[in-house]
Image 1 (cartoon, rainbow, N blue to C red):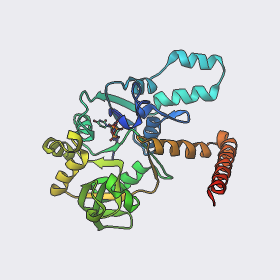
Image 2 (image 1 turned 180 degrees about the horizontal axis):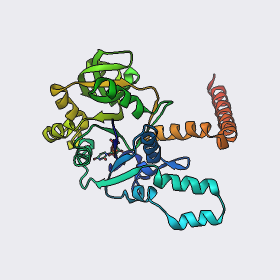
Image 3 (image 1 turned 135 degrees about the vertical axis):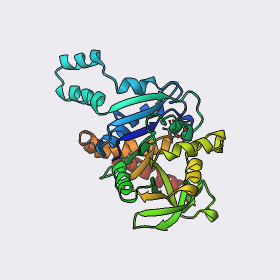
Image 4 (image 1 turned 90 degrees about the horizontal axis):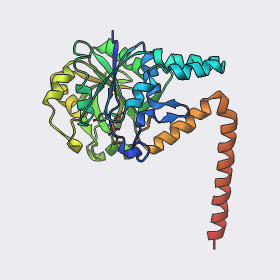
Length: 301
Ligand code: UTP
């Protein structure tokens, strides 16, 4: 049984500056809900309620978000907005959330190493705090199912277009089933020629406590940081690791383009916006089409 999750959320978020100068990227809202709340919800939907968030400098608002706010609650009660009140109470009671601070930003591997006392005896899930995966079955649940079947470290992967392979951690291995591979290779940002596949690591993992001794042996890698992928490569020499091809759509909200796409796609799914927002998008596309047509006309001989 997997009962614990770790959410690294201490990073600087430099790709999202200036928004992240004084606020965590994990707290940027998709419409009205911070990214990290979607991540916590994925844990809860997968039956995990013990969550350790790796926090750090400038991340206090994450703690406040999952804490109780009596003043706000009583204001909402005065307004007799029962639905909003229930929503607020849900946030602080959705899971048993702990925090630990990563004092120096030494990379994702180092962030996970901070979970060693919390997770020293049992396998645990890792969910990147800036990555939302939209799926019918929560991706964490998909990984738990794989772990229960194979009893090995599990990495979530997704197929990416070949031209994007050099941007990701890529895995290679032998098929155990349609969606599960026994890994033989893990390569960080390979060039296309040397990539064993176009299956990219997708921001969710099930790790066993053995990862902590692998992390102790992991030298600083890319960006002078302790990289989780490097630790997994060390682990792969000692024990089996599998990859599960996830069913779902991943949004890496650490980059602005994915953030925009998440906002648009999630708004279209929300009943209260869907009609108006879709109309607005269609009108916008219409204007763009007209602009393109008239500039073609102008430029044609
Ligand atoms: P990213 O690779 O997106 O790193 O981390 P980052 O440093 O936050 O972002 P950029 O590249 O500067 O824009 C993926 C997840 O791991 C956490 C981040 O908070 C994010 O949720 N992380 C990263 C840590 O907790 N500690 C670290 O040292 C690095």
